[in-house]
Image (tube, rainbow, N blue to C red):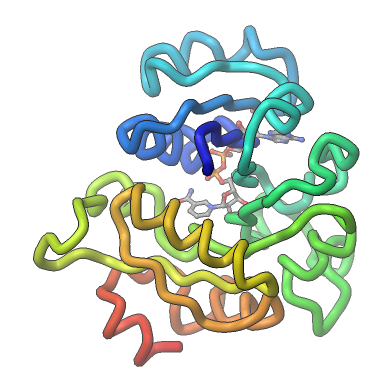
Length: 207
Ligand SMILES: NC(=O)c1ccc[n+]([C@@H]2O[C@H](COP(=O)([O-])OP(=O)(O)OC[C@H]3O[C@@H](n4cnc5c(N)ncnc54)[C@H](OP(=O)(O)O)[C@@H]3O)[C@@H](O)[C@H]2O)c1
């Protein structure tokens, strides 16, 4: 049973996901790149109830961890504390932020496979990366609500995909399974699905 979610990255996506997760009833621990005191005020104002902490502490204390930091920083993640944990990779390669792609991603590999290779003892599922934070904020709605939007999920472990799908549902979106982690490539910038804010039926057509 997932009770505590860690969010690594306290920027636009991290704060938005904290808000959704708190509303869904999860305990939330959130971290930026450094000392928690740097984010305490913004977390208290924007996501009251979330605990601002370090990435190490957040990873250690949580059942599931969401990666909401710039992709180019993934090698700074606390590998040891993330071992054996279910990790949702919501990161994207973005040239302006991350710099030349060849410094970050080996050609042919999806970004989440690259993160999985680094976090070799964690279980990575790709999700929550293709919808902009404004849409995540504005479109979350309860199950069976008309016009509910969908989030695609790619992962290798059946149970992990099920858990992540259930988290997505509780955050306010339908989850659409699209295949193994390599299929996460379909969700990356430049693909049909990136930036979309559509129903599960439409998302399935676009995949
Ligand atoms: N913005 C969106 O709509 C959106 C939607 C889906 C996915 N994404 C993806 O989500 C990620 C974050 O995007 P964003 O727009 O939220 O960026 P952002 O507003 O620039 O926030 C990035 C956050 O990551 C933190 N960070 C940097 N290095 C870290 C580390 N080693 N450990 C923990 N936190 C670290 C930064 O902390 P400091 O300030 O301390 O450096 C900052 O809080 C990107 O990969 C992006 O592609 C974004």
